[in-house]
Image 1 (cartoon, rainbow, N blue to C red):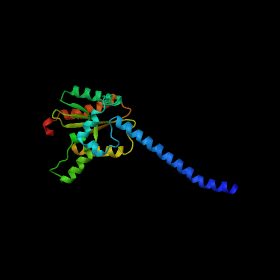
Image 2 (image 1 turned 90 degrees about the vertical axis):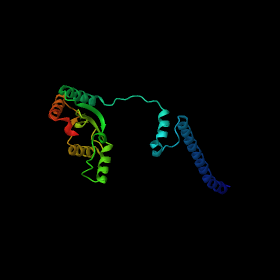
Image 3 (image 1 turned 60 degrees about the vertical axis):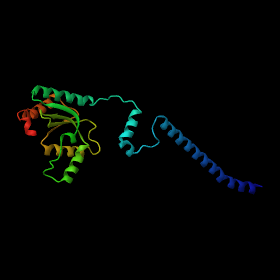
Image 4 (image 1 turned 180 degrees about the vertical axis):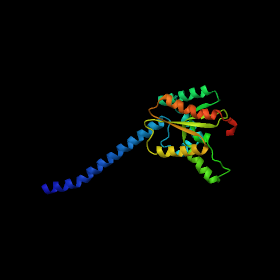
Length: 209
């Protein structure tokens, strides 16, 4: 009798494990189904690909399913830098304007008459996704000074390399660059900006056309 019971327990053991596995699969499937149903109830499809988001028709659907709210364009420290730049630009009375969070592809372009199309295209694509914190343009709309605020969390990942790319682009375009540290004195920033803009104020804006 003892031998028979022992043999039977060996037979029932894998059966019990199999039942537990089936139960586990059922629970996981139910969880995935509930998650998918919640996504659908919020108006989102089960999966969204990059191609979906790139389609303007689907973009309209995605945007119409939520409500937006505004958020600050600049943080508190960046806003203090903006106030300094605007004050200097107004004081010089030479037609300077201050722009914030500007795409580099909007203010810089390769000199295509000097370089091949491939080289120019690659160079433009390398800067087009990058932004400048502040750009000061002259009365003709050309950038003369870029001011970058390097906050406490700026130097992360590939930040140094990204900064090097922007510096090189500004250098070849003849655009001055000021990099403001996380801890800065307004008077120091004002002095640097005034010196650079003062030199440009004496140049005719037509020289940039």
